[in-house]
Image (tube, rainbow, N blue to C red; front, side, top):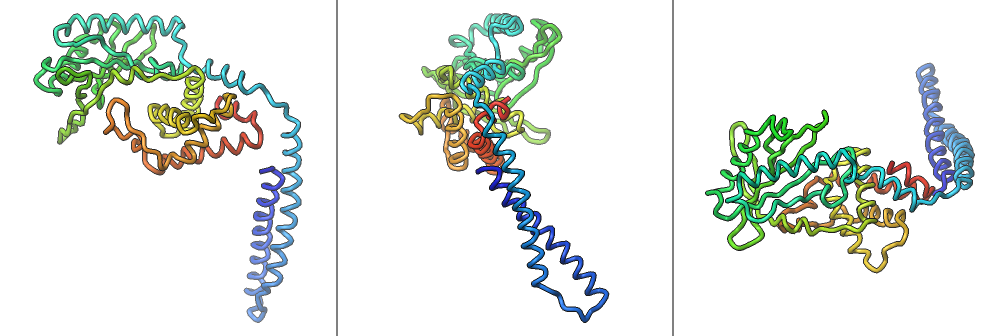
Length: 353
């Protein structure tokens, strides 16, 4: 919608109501002075019409100026600008900072495997956004899955606590400065060159002769312990792949949702991008800006009704990880960007910066 039309409607409403309110106050004052005076509805209506007329003219004039300036704005190369922006926001694995962190993680993994070598089956599995290439450079962690043999521990509770105790005993070694119990993993904080990073180790006990197994789900509280186990196959997560363009889109969307304060888990967002590509198969736009609008329209139209389950566990209802009010906030934010883009395509850069 052109600003001239939008501002004209808003001006008519605001000025019309404002002028009629002023007329209402004046008449009420006159009634207080002389109770015999009758309320003049025609005069109130005339005031509303006059106000609406003035508001329409003023709003149309201001909007027309904005429309003119908008029409004179030169369209930039959105493909290049959005790619460059995504590259600047994404984690650079070739940076000295990340290489130092990765070296530290590898040392921790090596020591861990040496200690539990009789209980671990196969290799530890890196996964998550850092592994998939969709992490932001200013907010990322490293996720490691630990597949233990089916008979390694008598139960998952014992497995989880043994991993926790192992890292607890190694604080102040291998750059480890802190640890914490999390819902499905043990968080390990390392400090490198005065900066802290978190590594999440998720132990799971394999089922006999299978790649799937069970995570320990930590739900212990002050009075009650409702901890349980959850079936999973974290090796499947490592197989999740994104194209270079999809990685760019996800990075831009992650940065946007953080800037907007939207409650939309990153793994849910990644599934929505995949779902948008699936739904629009055969009609995927060529340019990255139109691909972004395709995804935003998909979220705006389907976020309340889409059903997405985890690849590693179909009982993991990812689409139910946020409530309806949070979903509506995301929908409203998507619609705003779409409106801005329809009015001025260049606005995509400002919205995702």
